[in-house]
Each structure stands twice: as C-alpha cells, then as structure tokens.
Length: 93
Image 1 (spheres, rainbow, N blue to C red):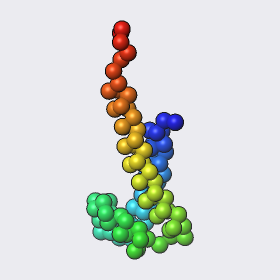
Image 2 (tube, rainbow, N blue to C red):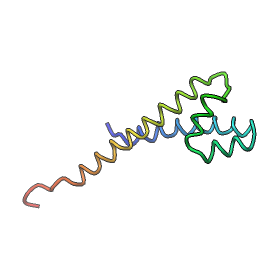
Image 3 (cartoon, rainbow, N blue to C red):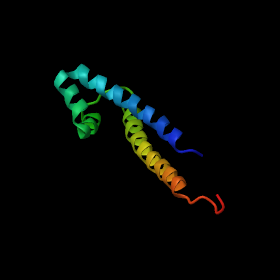
Image 4 (tube, helix red, strand yellow):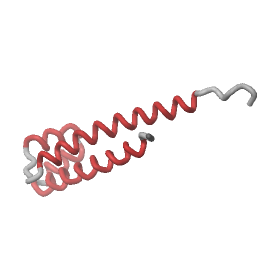
C-alpha cells in the first residue's frame, strides 16, 4: 500500500485539528493566538492547559496522533522512494 497518500490524509487531519486550536487561541486573545501560531511547542502546552472545548480529548488526540503518523508515513514513503531509485537496473539494459 502506498504510504504517501496516508501521510497526506493524516496531514490534513492534523491541519484541521491545528486550525481548531489556533482559532480558539485567537478568540481567547491575540497574544495567545500569536504565541500558538509562532511557537511550535506552545501549541501543545496550550492544547493541554488552556484549550476548552466539548470535544477537547478528540481534538488534542487527533492532533498529536495524526502529526506523529504523518511524520512516520512521510519518512517511510521517502525511504521507499529512495530505495526504489537506488536499485540497479537489470543487466542487459
């Protein structure tokens, strides 16, 4: 099964969850929104400490898990492409 489409799928899920976190942070205050936008690790701190939403568990778990899965599938897909490109052609060509 190709891994790059899975990476794209999980990347989109991660982007949607991040957008929900970001819009909540900007509604809270502009300073908090800018910090969440510009400081990568602060998004996790904000998600666990200040984010209040009826589906907080689903959004935070979706963000963390899909970010990790995107990185894994991108790495494995890139490795597969590099391995396929490095194969020597059969003799006689």
